[in-house]
Image: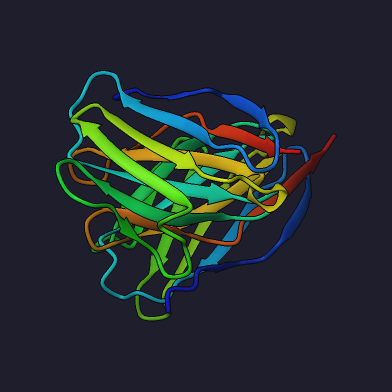
Length: 110
Length: 114
């Protein structure tokens, strides 16, 4: 089956870096994504990485992909209180349907 | 990016009634759209793939007679929850694939069944 696992909870102080980890199972995934969801809201695409890349940086966000271990991570530099939300990784399966991870709740304290 | 709208954004209905949720692609044509469900404090789970001009493809464990999907045109897919029960209360989100990596998600519809 397709299981995408994440740690449930992460707590950091404002200004620190946050690292959210994800393990996936389908080695044929073309794209891997990171989404942010605030309470009661829909999904916001933060970034994505193509499966033949190892790293992608986009302003405060750095994505690392280890295909051998099927491990994906999202690093948020200089984390702010506005970054508090639930973060989902997702892998693309077949014709662009997505399998989402279990979600990591990030809490940023002042 | 492209825009996907959903209507209604929030609906409360009584147990046993049916509810229709619309998903529209506002500025692109979608031969395929996906319907996801998210229970409180849980992840999104794919329910079905909506195909324009043909039957929807349902994921394992999703009752096709309960969750009726109709892809009426290249810009509209509907999900009808029939004979709704309180356990159907959830957040329903649709998405339409674009080119390459692109996925355009609707804002979601919160269904509460009393």
